Image: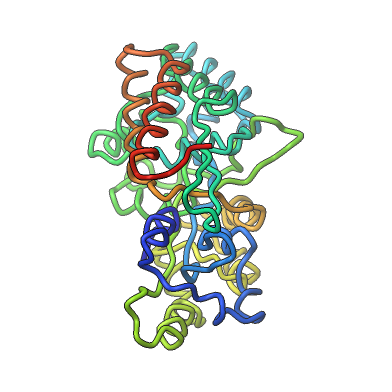
Length: 346
C-alpha cells in the first residue's frame, strides 16, 4: 500500500510494475478518471486506487450560529467571515500549518497552479513552477490571514492542535473526507463538542470556475520484483473491491472509498455521519468532490518538495521572508535538487 503522491518516486526507480494490461473496462469503470490519474504515470498504471481525500471545509455549527456566519463559498468570503468572528471576540477561524503541505499544494492547484509537469516518456525532463502567480497568491492569502490573527499556525498533526480543536479554538478546518476518522479518534467531537461539527464544500478562488481538489489517498501497487505480476495485480485490484470490505472500510471511517459502486450507492450517500451530527455529508460534500476531481501530476521527489514547502511556510511564520520571497526560495531550492538528481528543469 502506497500513498498516491509517492507512486512517481518509486516508478522512476523501476520499483513498480505497470498493471495497465490487467485493468479491463469493467475494472476501469469502477473509478473516476481522477482516481486513475493519481495512480498513473504517463500511460502506465502503477496502483489500484483504494481511498482518497476529496477536500471540503468542516466547521463548528455553534460558532457559525453565534456570529451569524453562513458557510463561505469563496476564499474572499472566508476571509470576511474570519474578520467578523475575530472582531466579535470569537475563536481563530482556521489554521495555516507547516505540516499540511499536501493541502497547501492542493489549494495552489485549485487556484490554477501546476507545480510539476512530468512525462515518463521523457524521464530526464521535469517542469517545476512553485513561484508562479497562482502559487504565490495562495501563500500570500494565508500569510495575510495569519498576520491579521485570523488563523493559527500550530502544526496540524500535534497534540496541541487537537487540544485546540477539542476546546473550540478553531471555527473551521480545511481538510479531507478522512478528517472525521482521525479527529474523532483523537477525541474531537466528543463531550461538549458532540454534534457541533458540520461539513460544507470547500471555498473556491473563482466561484465561476469551481475546482475539486484532493488531499491524501492510497493504492495497492505491485512491485517490480514480483515473479507473477498478473496474479499480484489481481490481488491488488481485488482488495477492497467486494461489498463487505468496502462497507467495513467506510462505516468504520478507515477509508473514503473511491469505488463508484460505493459512491453511487444510496447507503453511502444517505449515511448520516455521526461526527457531523447526522448530516449526510457524503452526499452533500464529499461524493460530489470525489467525482469532480480530475487528478494531480505529482513529482518523482515528493518528500523533498514537501519538506521544502513546509520550511517555506515556517519562514513566513517566523517573519524571515514574505510569502513571495519564500516561494522564490522554494523554487530555486527544488529546481537545484532536481538538477542534482539528474533532471533537466524546464
